[in-house]
Image (cartoon, one colour):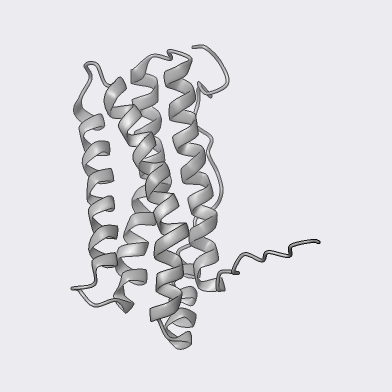
Length: 164
């Protein structure tokens, strides 16, 4: 007997964000690889700043300005999303000015990014698709598309591949 299990398809409104989440997971993986390979933490910190400036900051802003607007301010899911974003911002900010032993902060950031993406993909997006109207999702998707990010990551050195 063959089981045909289908995963629910995301509406187009959320596909752009899911693609961006893929790059955020790669970001976390690269940090982890740098830590495992004992790369100079200053290089990894520079990468965090690069990724923040190029992708992550605008991704979080997009979610806060477009996505959560369909939820009431008292909605616990909106609150959880904002908490995650605030914690990510705080860690990135700490890593911007801290030049001492930062391995713990880097490890915490990569764990947080992975958990944040899992939460959004597995819990928040399905919830959003339930509570938002089809019209809200359509408008959300159109607005998100305007602010899509190109899938680039040209940070040098590519420390996640070497032991530098």
